[in-house]
Image 1: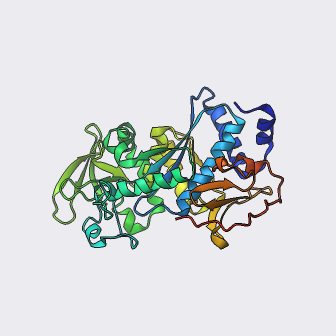
Image 2 (image 1 turned 45 degrees about the vertical axis):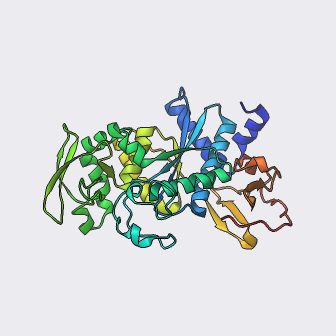
Length: 354
């Protein structure tokens, strides 16, 4: 439990992670005061290697999580969710054996051979790189694979709910699409039973009692009936986002300002499925600065905001504010420093993050 003086400071802090945490705490106490845990989530698209944006999303969410823990006694978890069942649309430029990967365009990332020849699939390789990346900087998280969740049946109940509320989901999505796209759009993407490709095709019939969709192969004209459960189909990313919040009981997931419209759509779908909106605002960014140093800045949400500088040297993350390497990325101390003051820069030249 947090000591009372520190909790009082956390509750009064105007730094954006604490403002976000207070909003989350108010919602949790209002909607489910007996809740056993509060679930934070971040997402990762493993069609490429993890990068500084991946780091930033997990770091910012961790800030809010730590701020929340300082001001409440609710246990928390952070789920890092990999969308590794997405179909590969383009061969990345920065991988070996590109010709090999090109043969599998359209297939789920976990069904594509690993061009590095180290893991079961390209998706498994990139998932491993993500976990190594996050472990290197001491994040506390749980990893989750979209392929595993879909194929194990963990999403089956929620997927059948999407099928039952298909018309409501379509009513939310269609106004956001161009006319040509809206003519063929479906929230469900069946996996072709022969080619293994994630198909983007219109749905000709929904059989709710059977839990299946009927669709036509545009090349052969053959009609298929595919279960929406068991990993035989997946959802488009915005309905998938909403379905995850609903199925897993996600309480908080951050997004950037570039996803405002997507948040509105996913939130509407989430409510159509019977759950309240669970997204959080993204008011920060992570960017490179000179000398191999990286600076994490939060943007203001109506008040002056302190800035925390993290200096990376080798594999160690050292907080420049408290000087402790074991501080890692639990950045609650950012809200305890007086606004407008910056820590002194260290004299040594830090190494770049690989």
